[in-house]
Length: 176
Ligand SMILES: [Zn+2]
Image 1 (cartoon, helix red, strand yellow):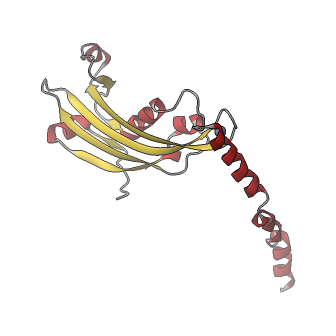
Image 2 (tube, rainbow, N blue to C red; image 1 turned 30 degrees about the horizontal axis):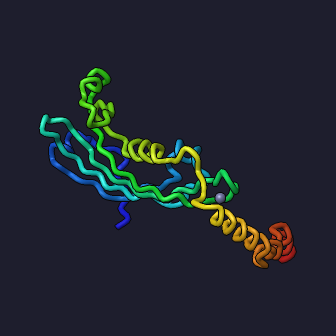
Image 3 (cartoon, protein in one colour; image 1 turned 120 degrees about the horizontal axis):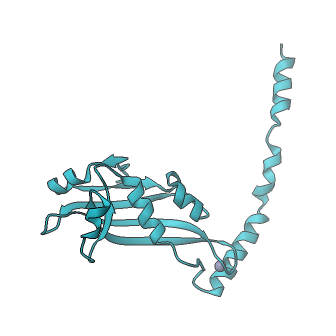
């Protein structure tokens, strides 16, 4: 159930065929999103339905779920921000056609090919909160506590015990 989505599709053809796309897209492959959030681990889970409106417009009805890592503006700690967004966009070949779209749909100008990533990234960007904040001051407090615990975990000190690569090299040399 974690099929990678295609990079690009012909949405008009898919609309004619009434096709659906389901799959995932890694968050770290979206550069605009990466700049807007603190962490881009994980994937967006995407479901897109290509269809035609009664008037013949090519539509994409979509649903995207992801968990974004944002910085809380109250405690400056990391927070997981779950996103679940539903949308309908109407595809138009050019700007002129976009002007004639009824208010009920968001027009998206696509001459022929749709870069699936652009659509996912646009919708995730629109889902970002104006100000990221944990839901309560208690949640901020908990985040700080977790952070402090991590800092002082004994595991964190182990790093130095790895063999020094230069020592390993010289011991290799000695064998010759
Ligand atoms: Zn916080």
